[in-house]
Length: 162
Image (cartoon, rainbow, N blue to C red; front, side, top):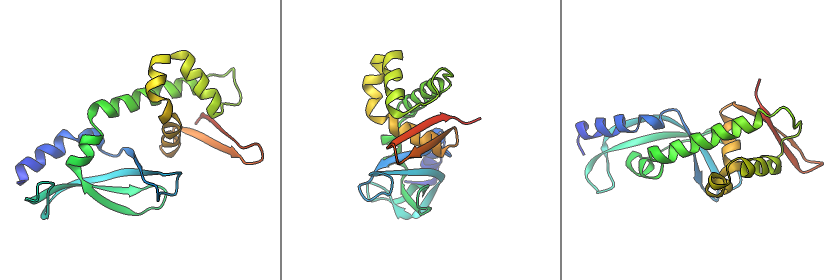
């Protein structure tokens, strides 16, 4: 890969800049998920790309739970996190934020959020239900919502950050 191709790939993946991305990782501290913020993307001539050719575009992450930094192939990450996937995540987070603005319910537990989300948009809920807790955690990491855990009642409560 040459530098011109790398610049094009970096430009085409601007939608990933400064995002928190979630990866499945059984060794992660947060329940099998690794939450990482995109720090930067760059071309490294000293690295090899997925086709074992000289020069690769790398994306640098910081694990927000441990503070450790690491790099991955940008093309691999971009295949997993396409513009469509990122838009679906953003849409789901926007719907969750609207639900959390509801002033009628003082205690917004995960169960309450799931039930309301299912009632509001059942079709979208079916495709996203296994990711809702991850989205809520990401929004908490992004400081969009607050999250309180009460161990005595085994309850986590979410609310809009004011």
